[in-house]
Length: 435
Ligand code: XLS
Ligand code: CA
Ligand code: CA
Figure 1 (cartoon, rainbow, N blue to C red):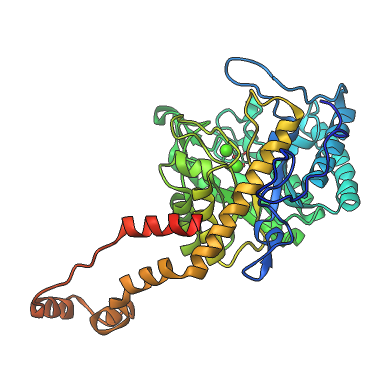
Figure 2: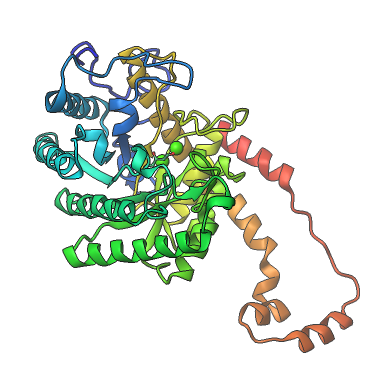
C-alpha cells in the first residue's frame, strides 16, 4: 500500500461535478429537517474491510497489498496512521473495529491482549489528534480455529471462557475509548447439523453469556449501547441470531430486551429474505433500533458480499425509517463494506466511500422530501383511521371482547374494502425522488 499523499481531501462539489474524488451529494454542513447531514448520517469506517481486507476470495489471494512493507506492531501502527488519515480526508467522524483488526495476535491469549493494548494506546492518541470517535468495537470470535464450533455456544467450556475473556477486554476498551457501543455479532454462534448439536444448552449458555456481559458493562460503568447484530447464515448454516425478530424473541426469553439493541446490516437483512427497511422497522417497533451496518448485497448471489451501498431507493427507505425513529443516538452508519476484488487501486477505497456516502446523502434527501410531502404518511394514517373511532377504538384500547365483536359483526351490512394503492404510492415515491 502506498501513502495517501496523492489523494486530495475530499470536498463537496455538487451534483454537476465531474471530479471523481469529490462528493456530489454529501454536503456535511447542509441542513435537513433541522440537523446537518453530518449529524443525521454519522458515518463510520469499518477497520476490517478498509484497512485489512486485500481482496482474497475462495479462489485466490489478495489483489491489494495492505502490509505497508512492515511486520508486527510496526505494520499495525502504519495501518492506524493510514486509517486516521483516510478518515480525515473523507470527513468520516467514526470508526468500528474488532480486536484482531488493530493489532497482531500473539502466541497466547495473554500475549494477544498485550499487543492489543499497545495498539489501543496508539489509537487513543490518534483519536485525540484527529478528533475521531469510536462508533463501536467488538471481538473477533470466529476467525481462530478455537471458535470453529462457536464462542459463547461452543461445546467446549474452555473456549467459552476464552470468549468471555475477549469480551471482557473488549468492554474495557469500549469504556476507555468512550465508544458509542459494543457489538455482538454471532460469528459462528449457530450450527451446521443438529446431529452433533445440543441446541438447548448452546442457547442457554449464550443467554448466560449475554447476562454476564451486561453485568460486566454495568460494573465498569460502560454507558454505551450493547448491540446484537442479526445474520441468518454464513459462516454457520443456521445462525442463532437469524434476524431482528428472532433476536428480540431470544432477548425476551432471557429478560434482556431492554438492555440490548440491534445493529442492523442491510446485506444480512436480504440474506434473511427481508428488506433492509423491514429489519429497521422491526427493530423500531420493538424499541431496539440502535445502529446500522450500511452496505448492500447482490440478490443474484446467495452470500454476504458486503458491497458499498449504491442503491438510492433502498437508502431512501432506510433513512425514512431512521428519521421517523428519531434518528441515531448512540448508533450511526458503519460502512461494513469493501471495494470489489477487482477494484484494487488505492483510489478505489476513496471512490467506494464517496459512492456510499453520496448514496446515503441522496437517500436522506429523498426521505426528508417524502416526510415533508406528507402524502405517504397521511395515506397510511387514513388507511387505519377505523381504529380511531367506534369498534376500532375499542379494539386498540382493549375494551372489547369476542362476544361484543361477534354481535357487532352480525349487524354489519355492506363492508367497504379500501384499495391499498401500492402502485400509486410507488409512483408517488418516484415522483418525489425525481422532482
Ligand atoms: C459479518 C459481520 C461482522 C460484524 C462485526 O458478516 O457483518 O463484520 O459486523 O463482527
Ligand atoms: Ca456487519
Ligand atoms: Ca456482513
